[in-house]
Image 1 (cartoon, helix red, strand yellow):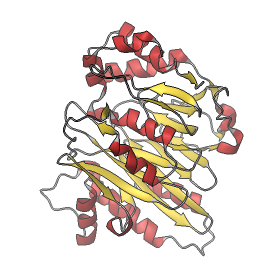
Image 2 (image 1 turned 120 degrees about the horizontal axis):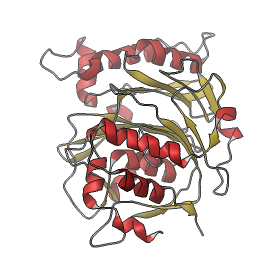
Image 3 (image 1 turned 45 degrees about the vertical axis):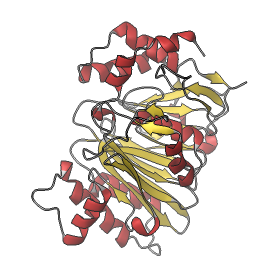
Image 4 (image 1 turned 90 degrees about the vertical axis):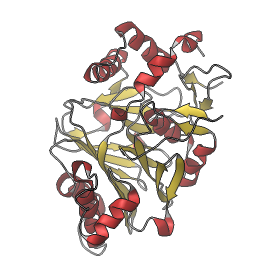
Length: 356
């Protein structure tokens, strides 16, 4: 790996892992007779263009956080994936890999990080991409906690929704420094918003949040809206499941601040999405993508993509556009990161190559 990786200063890393890298939004899973689907709605109160990235398998990667006492975390991506990012390459807000594993990081003010220990520290956006790279099932994602510690300089701001093509589904949270997993009987309704899962479930059962509870962006109401839609789904009806999920995203849980509405088909390995800038939906089909390590590096700027066949709208990776997205993130959050430092970090993340 390039030696300049170790020159990225520790303070720069801490500036990058702010709560704003996790999004407000809603995530849910719908099981239909012929498909398993995940819906994700991403909100933002600041202007985000974003980029969709096609990430290849068999790429040798490493964490960009400089370690003082040991080498950085290194891995090889087992799976190709498609990810959506507000920040730049290798920083994923949500995505799905070619095994049919979908993940989403959503902001949770009540999250508290684990204590510092011997595990590798990683911010939430890098963690999502790491999981997409290395995990094929929900169990694999849960096991990441054994080696990677999620960290944030102002309190860990995210919780996670994860589902796989085999039917696994879980919500992952850090509460008072402890890793908490909801699945099976502890996940009776597969929905996540921006409240602790148990509190959102309680609000749903009692008909609304108590007036003194924090309820960011009507999280309790969005949870209930998605839960009702899941309960109302009739597998015998003629409404196609993907259309049903997409309608839920664009109508029932949508907010004025919604920037991306994304429906993942974990079974067919396809994505339907639309953006606030371009409300006509696009579709990405994985059977038309080349995820091999020597395949083309592709991306899609999400500022104003035209409607139509999403695969045909993918373009060659553009380092300048990626850098502009990162610099826009820095500017929006008034981070003290120079243009030169931004360029060096993005150049490092672009340097990953096929594993030997």
